[in-house]
Image (cartoon, rainbow, N blue to C red; front, side, top):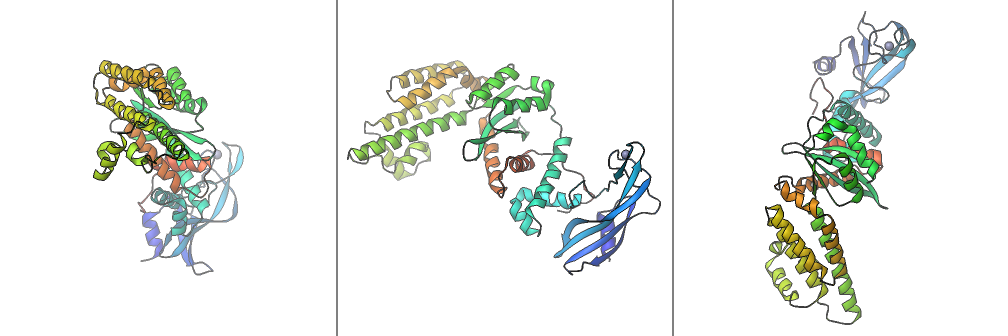
Length: 416
Ligand SMILES: [Zn+2]
């Protein structure tokens, strides 16, 4: 069986024939010459229609999927056409390649698939190619996917931000969180009003008007865009963000009080208490639980803040929005009397966003921000994997590639 027979089976194109396969001069690569089938006209790369020939360019090498340790190249002499429709002399279009990159489409698809499982660097190393080529491959596949995806009806979306670099560099990510369909819909630079508005421009007014649920954190620019664009939808404040915020504040209170006690030479009661206080009590080990109970006997600011935080968890048990509302009001009232300034600040913020919090119960808890959190965790993993050059463009491509559920370009064969 010859190599050409295999190629004809898996990578065959009308109007072109594989002529012969040889080892390259270095004996480490295989070069397969391709030529046009006799009598078949070249296709204009501008209008995608056959056009009369004009001249030939020099031979180009297209990188194909490596085989048994050999790099494989398709060698082809590009023709130029004199296209009357376009009124110019243009280079021909070849079905296995795509514009500028020197990779065949099949190889780009192949690399891009691996780049979803491995980091881009590992993908490049595994197939003895360069990081730049992996980038080209992913860019090709993602560009195709974004052009060919359909939004369909979107019932629920979640918006979140993710930090990608020091110095407050953030991305805005919008996910579809319908029951049954979860995917990344949008990556926006920064976490501004404009970056989130870009999403609504992309999906258009009709799809926007049919969105029923929106889940977000308390970031004011997001709240503003939602009020403007989606006033009909039920806007739910993300439960995970509220809990995370409380934990953050509690941790600051503990750290501050612990330092103060040390400087005053008091018994270091709060030493190694961090996880005791941040974990939910039911997730603690037996001995940790014992230590926690011991700690709670002391009248410390940290302890009082901890008890308030723990009491707040009861909110999520309610089903009725009005009872949840009563609980929330009572919790805020108690907290405002606590004389713990950071916790009071949270209570003020919760009061301010009371209705959005209660929307969680109005949505009958159907929309769980846990889905958004899960997707955002995957996004963080993706960001770590695409390391190499952590530019906005790289991250944008990597995120769409792994979380966008984009349609892939067709391939004549599954090269796995
Ligand atoms: Zn043309």
